[in-house]
Each structure stands twice: as structure tokens, then as C-alpha cells.
Image (cartoon, rainbow, N blue to C red):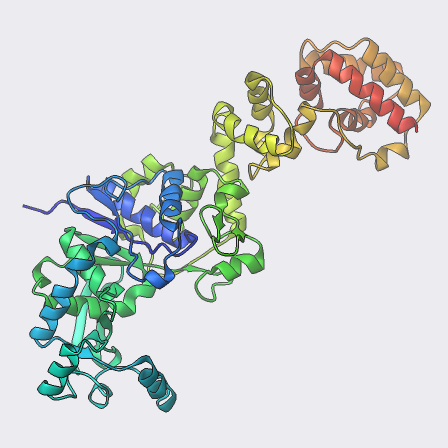
Length: 502
């Protein structure tokens, strides 16, 4: 009987959630949904020195915003808890000790000062096959010396004993056959002096305990794969080892290296899913959500960074991604991040999202500018008119503010140069006889009156738009007038004439 698919996203609670991390979570989620499996969120907080208060809740908020909430987590436990590694501490030491007993690991008593001295002595020092016998550990010391050190509770770590001149290979679900020579792999620490496991031991023990069947993680973890594979073998679990899939990196826009927060700061775009506030400094790093991205667009954009369905289609909702996602279509090559393309995705999703759904989000943006919306039905009508013009949610402020308040200024430089008393008279007459039954009727009347006054309608359209909007933008000017209504349109014409005459 085939095992049920179980995958996990296992972030460290150390700060903001990078879009690469969200993509890893997304691909785990999609694979689980595709195979009717289980998506697990496990918090890897074994490195307590890097733990940041509030980071775990932040991670859950990010996943919730994206719509990819786990089936099992600390907040929604299943039968495989606890879901925080710090709460599983007691389960790791016995496996580390078992590895020592079986000859696959050893105690290392080197002090931090001794290790620093060795690093200064040997360039690119690695604790491993060529150096371990020159260090203070249970391989280089006598049995009695080791026993005395342990009895006196001298601080020590447990390191894996990586074999010499072996080939460690596995089949990656994305990259195919991958092999490593152990001569290039150092003896990683498995258990720290404080009894906490390192990532290398904890991830293997937890994946086995939680019956994880497939591991999706970033390409940067490939160098750790031989250590993890050896641990599965040495602990006697080789036959139940999960299948591996190392995802391509998300690259800088120029393709030179992995995208970092520093790149985002330098180039002016976010790399975190949501705003992250550093609890120590109070510094806020902007996220895609707060910049004005819809979650559907963010998820769609992430899915296309390293995956496609083999067609020209680019817009996918989450349900469609669940249906069409396949490992075979994940690229081996890194994917360049393009912020303009990211905004394009958001623009496309804004266009296809019903105005009634956008209403709540846009109201929040308007309230930031002290623009109060008293009538949702009116706002929804406005949004239907302008949403095709918006790339980010804050764009709705400029594109809709004039529907709620008089223009605060006029972009009238081009108009004033050609403004005449005759044009002012035209607009005064037009305002007095305003018929806004429909945009079509308003336009017909406007053109007829223009002809009567000896004008071409085209030379009066821009002044009319600026009277209503304040600038040279917006949907059809007669649609704007009909939406505003007779009184507001008349008031705006009157105010603008005064300003243009000044």
C-alpha cells in the first residue's frame, strides 16, 4: 500500500518571511493538495540564539494571507506533534548518542577558543577527515580520557563521522541523479553543548517521526544533502527515507546570485510577504501585502518563478494551481525576479477581481488618506470604472479620490495658456443646462453646445476633465460626470472657472 503523501514547510522563526520561503511553502502545499496529502508547518527553533519573538505568529499570518494554511501545525495539531522543535528537545539526544555508540558519530570537546585558533592556523579550516585526529575528541583521545571528560561534564558537542572517499548519491525529483564525494563534506555538529540539536539532526529525526514522504526545499540546501542521507542510513531508516526535491533559487533581477533583502532595499521593492517589524529596533521592512498586492497575485507570481504548466497561460488561481501543479514542470534553473512583472500580475488580478471584493481593501487605502466612504454601492460603481487603471491598491487613492472630494489642485498649465472668456461662458451655459441622464446624452449635449459656441468639442474636453478630476487622467469624462451627479459637477465647473480666470 502506497504511503499517504505528507510534506512539511519548516521555517526558522528569525524574522521576515522571504518570498523564496513562501514559494517553498506554496510548492509543498500544492503537491499535498494534488495528491490528497497533508501539509505540515513545523517551526525549526533549535537555534535559540536566533529566535525572534513574534516571528512564528508572523509566519502563520503570511501563510494565512496567501491562503495556504497547513493541515497540521502548533495551532492546529494532528497526531505528530509537538510542531515546534524546541518542544521536541528530549527526542534528539538518544539518537545522537546512538550514533556515537554505533561508531557513526563522536564527542568533540574543543573549546570555541581552540576552534578559532585552528581557523586562524588553517585557511578554510574544516573539521573533518583530515583534521579530526588533530582535535580534542573521542576519536583522538583515549577511552579513559573521554570517560573522565564526560564524567566531569566538560562541555562537548556530538559530530557526525563522515566516511572517507565514499560516494553519496540520491535521485532528486527535480534534478535527477545527484552525487557527492564525502571528501568535500565536513563533520557537522549534530548535538550542541546545550543539548539542543542542530538543523542536521533535528530535520532527519523530525521528518522520520512525522512520517514525511517528500521534502521540498531550496537549492541552497543541496550541500547538506549528503549529511542528511548518511543520517537516514546510519539511524537505520534508509528504506523509509523521503524523496527529495531541491527547488531552483529565486535570483536577483540581473541573474547574479540569490535574491536577498539587501537587493530589495537597494532596488526599491519588497522581498517579504508582509510587513516585518524588528522587535529590537522597531524598524519596519515593507511587505508585498502592505505595498498593495492581492494575495492571489502574489501566489500566482510565486508559482511562476520556476514553474509553468507547459502552455502560454500565466494567470492561475490557487484552485487551478492545485489542479495543474506537477513536479515535472519545475525548472532546474534559477528564476530571475522581475518586480515589473510582479506588478503586472497584480494589475491583471485587480482587473479580474469583482469590484465588490475590492471594496473592503480599497476603503482601507482611502481611510489612510482621510477619505471616508459613506456608501459602498457608490464606491463599487467607482471601482468598476477605474480598476483597470490600477497596478497596486494604493493606486486607487489617486484614481478615485476626486469622486469623493473636490480636486485640491488643477493640472491647468496647458489650459490657462489657451483659456478665454468665451470658453468660460461655454462652461457656464453648459453647467446651467446640465443633463446627466446618461454619459451618452451628456456628451451629445456637450458637443452640440460646443458647435453652437463656435468650438470644436475636442478643445473643450481636456478643460472639462481637469475641472472634474484635477488632472489629465481617469475614465471617460462623461462617465465621471454622470457618477458625480448634477450638483457636484456644477460645483466643480464653477470652482474651476474661478481658478482658471484667476
